[in-house]
Each structure stands twice: as structure tokens, then as C-alpha cells.
Length: 99
Image (cartoon, rainbow, N blue to C red; front, side, top):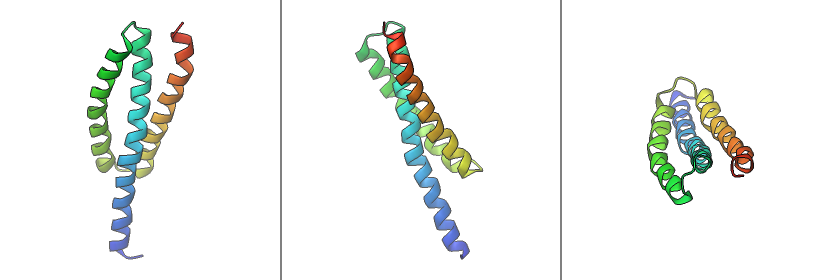
């Protein structure tokens, strides 16, 4: 494998991690944030609007971090794993907090 091919594969992996992993992380952040906002008494529309606005900033941070982090495996673990954990937490907490 030449250095040019390795460079292209590395960039493609970073782009995939930044877009797909960032999307998963923001999805989890948004769902968990909306559930917690509702639990704190916010109306759904306000919680949704607030988290959608914050989602742009969080995605930008995730996107940029995916390119400056040393390990692509760590990027995938944090973004995809964190997104899955936050989504799972929102799914588990929503019936408990919404009573």
C-alpha cells in the first residue's frame, strides 16, 4: 500500500467518523436533552427548539474533533459509543421521568 493510498484511506476514515459518528453523537445528545428538559418541566416545543439549536454547535465540535484527535478508534468510540449510550439512557429514562 502506497503512502498516497494510505493517506486517502485515512482521510476517508476521518470524514466517515466525523459525519456518521458526529450524527450519532448529536442524535443521542438531542434525545437525552429533550427527555431531561421535559423532566424539568419545560414544554416539549421549547425543549426541542433549545436542543436543536445546541445540536448545531455540538455537531461542529464533534466534526472538528474527529480531525484533530490522534486515534481514529477513539473518535469512533467516543462519538458512536457516546451517541448510543445517550440514546439508550434517554430511552430508559423517558418512561421513568415522564410520570
